[in-house]
Image (tube, rainbow, N blue to C red):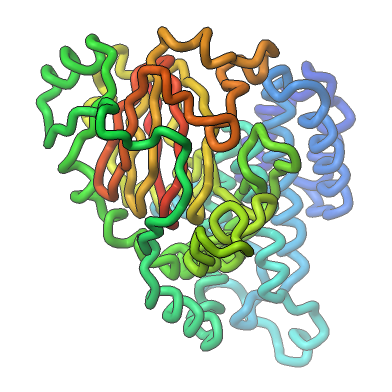
Length: 450
């Protein structure tokens, strides 16, 4: 743990300034002696600190300390287990600068000293579930920790994923499950889902569709003109366009990763909540079942074949920061370099049919990129803001109090709507109100920029 200890030493003054002097002592003992108990106490304290008050007011030192605590818990835990091949885990990857950015533990895998069979039998055995629990801790560090120790977190995640991948390859049941997933189309059509009143009327405006407009045309016509448009011809060149149609792709490569999902009708609805699940569990519980629905006319159908409180949605999550391997499947559109050209966030939206994002606006330029499946999108210009009845509180002021599915479709107001097909990008100008509803199992990527 020498590398992480060295990085931690330079961080400790910041933690002390944030009021964490006692935590510095716990961290030092965990770094120097590999004391799991000390690392776990540090983790519990940091967890409480980052959940005290509003998230934006949490001192970044406590977020960094939380990431450090998770790294130390993982390191200290693995010191107590023999390596899967019979060696003792002594050199867990910790220096992201070595071994091509993966950590020096990879080079050490073949060099660790072996132990005699009788000695090995007396040591505790690490199980797949233990690997999964440690990987979850690192995912929590990636999602909620600060940036200072992120390279160490990523290198350790790579190590654990490689170990779990070896188990996965030898597990015939898991292999068969992934093969079975590849047999159904994620983009399975569902043309019977109910849409808000007034949807897709013949006299409604539609966004103009252009195939690969020039940067100049896009900037002048749509960004300066503040008009929505659909761009064709970009997503079809992404590796994601083919790979993401197979849910087994996600399960095989990243099925053990922990992701946050929203459960419920949408974030403004009663009973809405958030959960942490593995990627595999999310796909099995929400994506696979999402294609097996009752028709809309069936009296047993509630909200598209599932009870509204059971719909799971991986929504507005920086998945590509958390799992950089998936980032290689997409490309940032050149249009995002226009204006100030500053990317604010790149988020994933993955879910079954009927997932809803209620009527709201965003302050940034947005390219909603539909990789898999279709979505119905309705837009209203900023001039309609007063009639759309925004909430008055600070947290929800960019969301409308009008529920398009239950309060009527606002058919008397100027709107632009469309069905966004796989391979299409919808440009949504800043402060344009929009409502989105998935018609199929779908995966979208949103690029927000200034």
